[in-house]
Image (cartoon, rainbow, N blue to C red; front, side):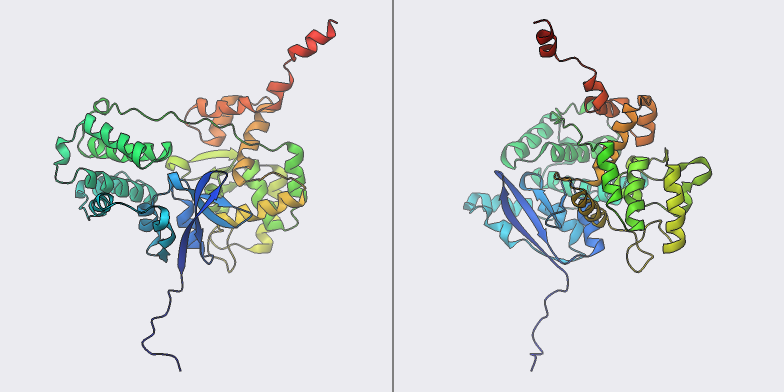
Length: 383
């Protein structure tokens, strides 16, 4: 007989656990797959998806438990007991942890300004969580009296003692600057906070032959259209998910991307061949709201599913390295550059604010490298 007093386990549970990989400590998320949980985790700073393990993970140095809890606690029970085993704090550090977790009241003007300026839900959560940490640190002090030196000392303390990443450092600075500049209306130059040096990584790209092999290995029409559209228009994964049928402008061979990064609209190009395949897809699948929908219809296609189908297609195509949806966007830009498309047009198609961002593709294009004569060849020819 089942005990009437037994409390059932929550249906949805996320287990966080640590794991070392190549001298880097990672935080993994283990849970039964739910689209709303997948979507919430994917928007968190530093979130990465492993196609091989079909799970989300973070670098420990970039993981913010408080922010994770804020975003996911309404969707699932979060078991972070394994993370507590990281260290055995002394009584002094225990006292500090209690102060850091003390509840704070965020100024109404802070939240109201976030709403009025129409910041995204994720930005609201991030700024609120990080500003709450800032208020806890300066517990007992008037916010208006905290100066530039105090703020620099606070950031330095986070970098030294909490080992926060460069990206998290920037986000915390932005949250603080938002309050003093956007809410209190102080001048921007008042906060000459030293920014971390941004790491520069060249984008990973696929050759046209590899793109062709991946698409030829994709037999499902819906999957083929998804991958082709990301590549053909240089889309971010989130932009593809948010597309609706009327965003495809067939007569102009264009696609209207609404509310992209920075809430900016833009137009991009689309292949004529792909347009014909999309018409076949639409007749066969009959999507009701979104251009690409999950099983059962009516719901947006999940970002993690795109990663999985691309990973599977790449494996079938015999590509050994890890392939991600963003590599399709990088490849689109690189191939356009190799076709001698003006950099300013590529900038507009990708939705970059500055050509400096787009210029990174000049470092990976084959034509920019293959045209260079190797000095050793010159030496050997003269022998």
